[in-house]
Amino acid sequence: MLAVLSQAQGVIDVHSHIITPEFVTALETEGRLMEEGFPLPKYDVESHLRWMDEAGVETSVLTLAAPQPSSAAVVRATNEEAARIKRAHPGRFMFCAALPLPDVQAAIREAVYALDTLGAEGIKLATNVQGQYLGAPELDTLFAVLNDRRAVIILHPHRPDPVNSEVMEQTPLAMQEYLSETTRAVTNMISRNVLARYPNVKVVVPHCGAYLPLAVPRMKSLTPVMQANKMVGDIDWEANLAALYYDLAGAHSPETIRMMLTITTPDHLLYGSDYPYVAPQVLTQGLARMKQYLTDEHDLAPFKDMFLWKNASWLFHQRGEKPSVMASNAKMIVRIAEIEVYPQYLEEYLEFANEVDRLSVEREPGVICLFPMQSAEEPTQIRILEIYASDAAYQAHLKTDHFQKYKQGTLHMVKSLKLPSMKPLDPETMKLIFKKR
Image (cartoon, rainbow, N blue to C red; front, side, top):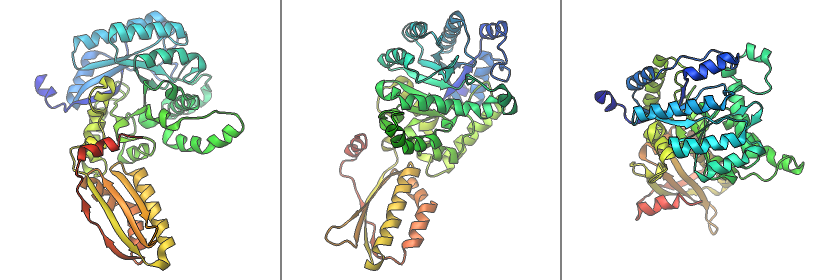
């Protein structure tokens, strides 16, 4: 075992499930074993540990699978079993406790017991329980308690309520509706500023953010219309989005990660497996593939350890400096590009420059800053403040489609170009600058 652990490289899996015999028996008694449209997989700790050792996962975070049990006693028994597993295998497991919703007062009692007595690392919440969706006003008292304890919440989709059973038979929940459920629950919380009002709570969104990379820009664009019709109030987008973390369980890929980075930052992405719902050999291959593309893709490589374990370690312990681009060991590139443009092309050049700068900052996590400025006295004199997380990030930037479009489109417009590298006199202060908002 020790030999295997030495190769584990610290990977933390934030998305795995515990399925106890008591849980299965309770669902069978209630006639709910197939409520989510597919059978529950078998689970035992020994098999879980065997897969972790084979895949190189050091620690897994256990959460109760769907559906939500009706009995508070079953919820309590599951939480106590998760705590027992954690004690029996030090360093290998953490757990986020289930709550007996929709009874809010019972849920508060269980949350306090799990966090204060059992030593749970966080709380698992379903997108809805019997139609009580996250974001509902009656859950504010629960979130106040979780906020006081700086709780981490693992979110997981459950069957929507009400549900169209015919649609579910045609397209199983896991293939589509789970993504809608996740998006629905998170946008509910955002529209009511739940995460802004309880800023100490952190929420892990499953399955690569579901549809949020599409939903968030749409919500932002429609908010003024909704507000004009008194359908929503003010939304603190920055505070709400800052509370959201995302696991990479499911269809992860470099393209998916880049899409997620349009609504979040590299310090908010976490590895997740969805064990035991996916065959162990598939999970092992998937993790190996992730490690490979996080090594090969130059724009993502600086964040490999952050995605695989550093972000999760900080999130669940919240001690020390938070992982960030600026905390990377890679040497930053800082410079001010000095450009002179032919007067007849000035307006056209500015359009190109503004586009490439915006797309680079939005799409490339390693591009810290591209900020164009125009001389007030000499309008054809352009200066661009450029900051890249590393040389690898800079090289990756040069290969992007948007940079190539800029380069080829403006060659005939530029009279002169100088790229003097600048040496930061105090790199530690630079890190502090980018922590400010």
